[in-house]
Image (cartoon, rainbow, N blue to C red; front, side):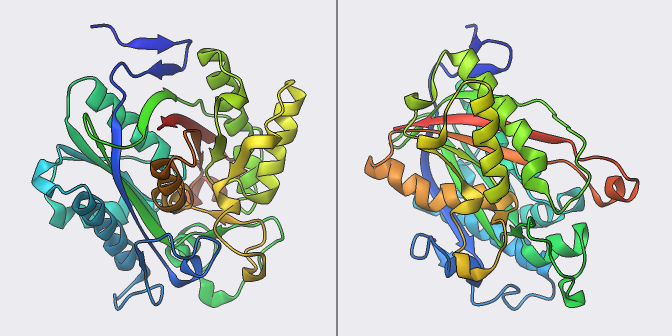
Length: 335
């Protein structure tokens, strides 16, 4: 049976898959932030008795997947596929975590858009009849990401005001063909957008145009207006990028200010001095797997649009003076 395609970039699922459980593990700074009390586990420190930050990140993503599957009252043997990714070169944290999980695995790299990408692809597998149950997961680690993309934290390099703080944490979800919970109803696959920003400390402004491009396309493909959703969430644009989205949408004649928020602005308190807010795969990962999923299950939110935002640069591209290509993927999640 032909699946329904909406416009050029969006799809509508005939049998919307169900998100039956989620789990989130975070570092101490995240656990002490605005969403205190919503996480399944808060580590005492950022290394958790492991020999490196990278090994700690592998632990987090494995823990989150196992916990989400446990909360689904399932076992790993019931999971057809795992779709997961992180920010490190060659998906190091995820690949090492998969060694002990022993399930068919698809590694995904959409930078910080990976949660939305994994929900989109996992839902496509289920709606297409290729799977009954998938687990999706993302992770990031502040210290591991800083060492790879910028400078080791031991150097004490001063961060500019527009910089964001990479989240230490992991979020996972179990998506099934049947069950109780919010459903993934539509999705919009993003395009790479690059407006020429080269500074990796300004990822919010770099990613905002991609978020706007995907949101604009989603609304046009589906024929919806922003007020169709209780809330629209982007992944990790931070304060500066969030305001750019509002401004750029207003220039297109659409006001999203009444029901739009960025996950990167929802994690840390002002006095935690993260400058522009949170970033990283785990920004949208932990916000969705803890706070947003809880609101959806309780019925406090009935329809949300989650737009994962990703900055697709690398240390090599930065050293070669390349600009930053960005992408955003959107999934509609409805209770």
